[in-house]
Amino acid sequence: MAARTPTLRQLVALLLAMILLLPPLSTTAKAVAAQPAELRCIPPGAATVAVPECSWRQHMPHVECSKFPPDAPAPGRAKLSLDVGGGNSIDSRSAFCVTLTRFQRNSCDTCFESLEFRNFTVGWAVIGPRCTERDCSIEVHILESVAALSPLKYNSTSTEFWNFTSPVFREDEDFFITVAFNGITMWYTRCSISLTNIYNLGKTSIEKLVLYNNDNISTDLKLGMMPKLKELTIANSSILDFPEDAHVLMPALERLNLRDNRLTSIPASIASMRKLEELNMCGARLRRLAGQLPPLPRLRELCLCNTGLCCLHQEQDAFRGVPNLELLDISQNQLTSLGGALRGLSQLQYLDVSRNQLTEYPQLWIQDCREGLLSFAFNHLRTLPDCNSFCQRSNVLLLDVEHNQISSWDGSPDMLSSNDRPWVVGTLVPLLENGPQRYRVCLHERDFQLGTVIVQNISRSMDHSRHTIVVLSKSFLSSRWCLWEMDLANHRTLDPSQREFIILLELEPLERSALPRHLRFLMDTRTYVEWHQASDVQYEDQAFRRLKRALGPSCFTCSDVSRC
Image (cartoon, rainbow, N blue to C red):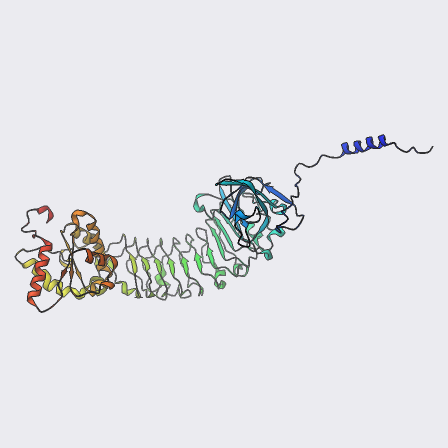
């Protein structure tokens, strides 16, 4: 029997039946939005995804998107930069290529995550026609491959970072520069990230890796090949060992921070890190350096605070391999003496030996202090040293000896201006104390209370005096101690009733331009006594009369005994 040719009605019915049998279209399918014809941000026809909740403010070069990536279970915030190439202002055109600059998010309010990029073009954007003075509507589209990146899962069993095996993160792309966990919030939150995840960062262009406060119980740190890494921080993460081949895996490393871990020695691999400039091992369990540090000629900063160090005075060559140190922190240890352990550190600008048990100062010879700071606070020191014993050339050397038992000083000219003391003790004091008015003068060698901290003696003496006579000379200007005493006395003049507390006595002509600014101001705004040393008895009598007028009645004749 011959086959019948289907009629038109039958063909239509068959077609409708086939359509009804087709599965429904996926609701998650992404449309390929066409980028504006004038842009060349992404390859033509590449699939893109719209990013919701993005905003832009006028005259700002970046866009903030609060749900990025758009399909992630726990999206974060992204900062996208607008490419305004050719010097055109943002207002002059409506469509721009966008580059991903920063991504950050919190996971259940426990861990802060941040990724940074450089020149990473991910899509394009169009600014809406209605743009108010504050937030503007903006349409952002990013590549589907970027939107599909799998973010890190925060739990102790996770072994996945972002999908760094994706071609998007190839090393030769050279745009991925930083990954940080708690890099901003620092000590306030905790993470629980498997340290084996760090291995997956190998073969990327990462330059900085930061991980603070990791609660993960695994202490096995394994590193991948990161040839461009310059800064590595893994702090407070309980790691026990540092890879022996770290110098091969990170040949460009400049800054290494391993503070507050469970390391018991300085990692052997740093001996071959020739570019290392900063090393932080605070909080480790070192106790002894067990010999000297390896030769690290570029190392400028070394932090060994709270590491249990006790015997550096027995390891005199400990720092010989790091002669260019500018900062050394060995505070919060158990050091009773340093001896000559610091003798070769001639480039130091900052030394912190606070909160130890020192009873003597270290042997230290700094070439040029340049406003350096030496902190010996919270120790058991009893003397105040001569700053020149520490530094060859010093503009300003700050010495912190807070909370010690200082009751004496070395009596050097630089500290006490002893060049002027023969005149003060032999001429000025007898005139004041043995004259008709019999003023009472406070001299440190005679009137300071023995066994009391020197700073307290000076402050107490000023509190119980009506005036402080400042004898100005070239020796005075070169004495840091004398300048400090004058600054202390100058604070009293902030009280209007104490404005004349300081009496300036110029012992020799001084060049005004060489005076400190605050001293020059005092001499320009107040009357001072010129007592230039000369053989003219009449001149000296006249200078003494001016001094007595400034002092007023003596304590033995004034009626206001509360002022005596």
